[in-house]
Image (tube, one colour):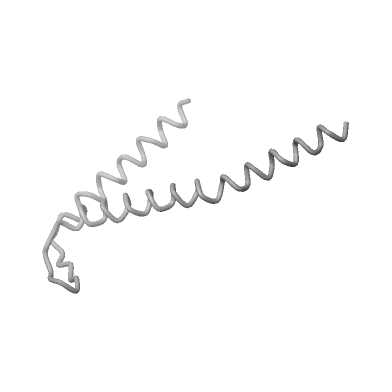
Length: 80
């Protein structure tokens, strides 16, 4: 339990340092225009999009695998 709390505090400290170092404005260019935003906001949006895509892909890949495992369990129980 203590190890989890210490790890969480270290990660939070690193995150706070990372945020404080990335407050400058960055310019984002798209086909239809460009705009500026804080680097930490851009990093946060990118992280969020990546987490969402990873979660969706995990669910898509996990369903067939779980279904196959259930079929194997059913086949093994039928053999007994």
